[in-house]
Length: 128
Image (cartoon, rainbow, N blue to C red; front, side, top):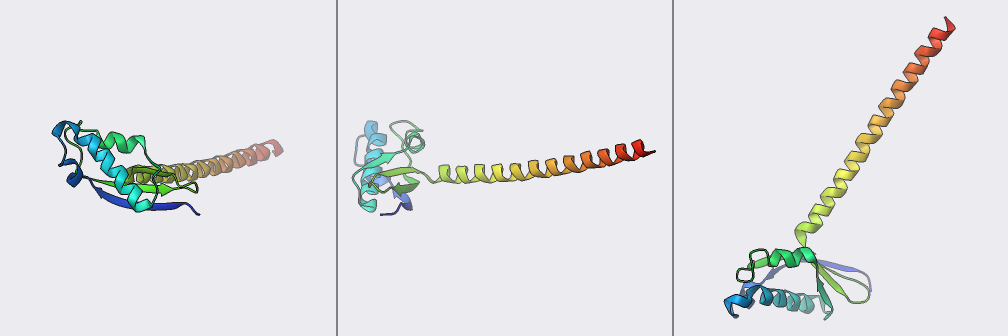
């Protein structure tokens, strides 16, 4: 069984409107867990820290109405759920690292060229 990755937009409003105001974020987490377990066909669902903080950001009384998430199921059947934006941020960080590495390699090449020129000049001055 290969690693399975899916993106979902999970509607939370229908679930938490049926509960008292003072339990809404807790119910939103339960609705998210039920949705993912149904769609990924696994009872073992773990919600990552960033997603949990996003749901609880405005307190217990006012969770978001829907959440865009990425669910990843591993070989053992464990599903980890995280925000889509976290995935995008990681990709941006990787791209920045690549461009930074390219810039550093260009700087090293230019420094090497300058060193070679300086060595050539010093050799010519020694010959004279």
